[in-house]
Image 1 (cartoon, helix red, strand yellow):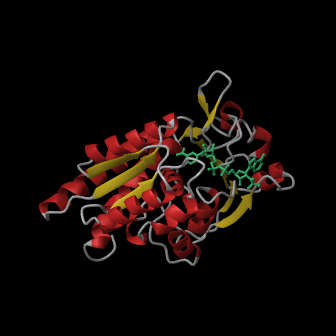
Image 2: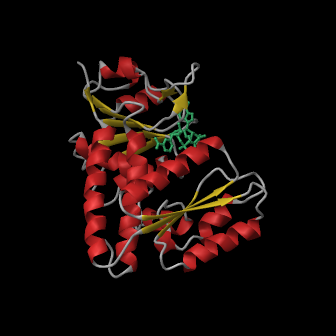
Length: 288
Ligand code: NAP
């Protein structure tokens, strides 16, 4: 069997088109969604990511503000910047690009972001709201995975879904989303201490790989006809971008699979834009 490729790039383009239309409609009401990205230091990968978010928000007609701080910014200074953005009426969404330099406490900074503007969904309040089944914002990467599953025609209700990885960024919030009423999946979360990862994956209708380990998921670990979503973004020996899934081997067994690049990646920034739009609407009366 040759798996169908789930095209994240094409899906992201369609979602962005819809977001742009909604931003235009909001503009008629005098509202421009505003996103502020704070970056501390000049980590090359972070600079690229923040640049992508900046370009995406501008292309969609949003207000985009980049706050660039020197690497020796103190915790107090960073917290003051977040407080100013919390109070800034033009800003609907705030993200602080991670990783921060070692002397700064990312958890404390995330906690200070106003939950109404927490479009990256990393504030423990936002994560807690999701965990108790009353979500505000969905974290961007797992939100993208939900849309990719929908695109693949997966009926999550009753489906057995194995998520490999339990991070607060991907695995844990995704498990909380998929078990919400309305999504109703039966979720298994695997991690580095899981005994017999292959068995746990083979039981699943859907495998989501989010471990950050090149080639971790091989064909023998996937049930025939399963859907495979590869969140992993790792660098190969030659520097190219690869996922956690042995794409060629698994494609022979799965019914549908996301590629890397071109799968989950394009959806992550797109869902940040979606959250910013939702934040703008919610702050001006009623949730989106
Ligand atoms: P992370 O914080 O390092 O978490 C990795 C998780 O995978 C941990 O729970 C770890 O288990 C588990 N794990 C590691 N090795 C394993 C193994 N051999 N078997 C089973 N589980 C294993 O990483 P993350 O931030 O969640 O990111 C995961 C991957 O997704 C990375 O490649 C990252 O670059 C990528 N990512 C991509 C996007 C995107 O937009 N495409 C966004 C976010 C992340 P323990 O908890 O036991 O250590």
